Length: 428
Image 1 (spheres, rainbow, N blue to C red):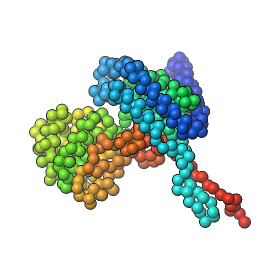
Image 2 (tube, one colour):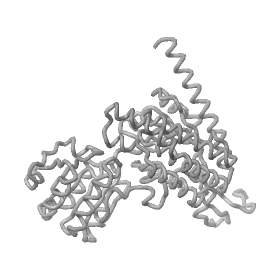
Image 3 (cartoon, helix red, strand yellow):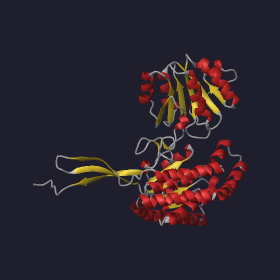
Image 4 (cartoon, rainbow, N blue to C red):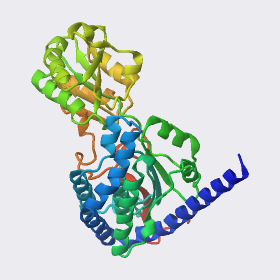
């Protein structure tokens, strides 16, 4: 490494460290500010977003045109694009977060011990949250809103493909904070597109409490490998729908079709359809035609290929693939046990669904499928913070510690024990 490159890296680390320290100072103020002050800031942010629709569309257009010039996949361009409708939805998402109950200071499980001590748990902010994300510029607003509602400060490092959009949204967030009399350093964007900035953020283990990566598997693996900061993982969504022998086939067709075609680029999109052998022929006869009409390419096992002319034979790689596009893997299974075994081997513990009217099989599926969300007679695309009543979400955690599934406001807090006494002692 040259001396000039070393100096550049040192400057970058120093800049990110300064931002992290400012965020740490702001986190203390935000945590103490109270729910009404944080709510006022969120409403000011939402108003600023609504008032800046034309400017946001113009900034976003620069990012979209650059993405198309780089031949990014259509699903990635779709994630990147901000339309007036999406901007309005982004502002509404911030308002919904503002109206959520304030979790900070809430005491639960208060109980009295034989000693007379009353012991409970109080919900408190995590502190400073670093968020590294790709493509979707709406994450800038969603992440800022959720972190603020939960009393946290945040450092945001968006993908270079959304640079102009992220900067514009970030400026509106900071303006909303200032309008409400709160420190703008509570939400900061790491503005450089230099990839070394990610490493600089991951090195802030003394100032940053949690890192949340949102993006491809490579990003998440890199973050987990390169930091000592606790990581709230949002891994890929290899989601399944299993149609049981006892399913209502009309319902199964609706659920499976929606699970795949609602939006191809979301992590809750179905990537593999599992069909019980007794209903596979009937369901694929109608469902296969509907998928073909919508340009969905099918890759199947030998039994699936025998039922649908022109279906391409699936490989092992297809069973593990998050396509995020108009491609679907299909497998015929002998029973529910084989379906659960397939999900366990090839799934990503994100979201999986069963369509069935058999209560015993439903209960087996719900108990034995080890995923963050398990759906019954509903499409996997419902795996979403808004649909779960959480408002906006920071992501869908596929890990098992702290938070799992859609991570909303409560998932961005922790708890501490509080003990109320009346002069009790343990000594004589």
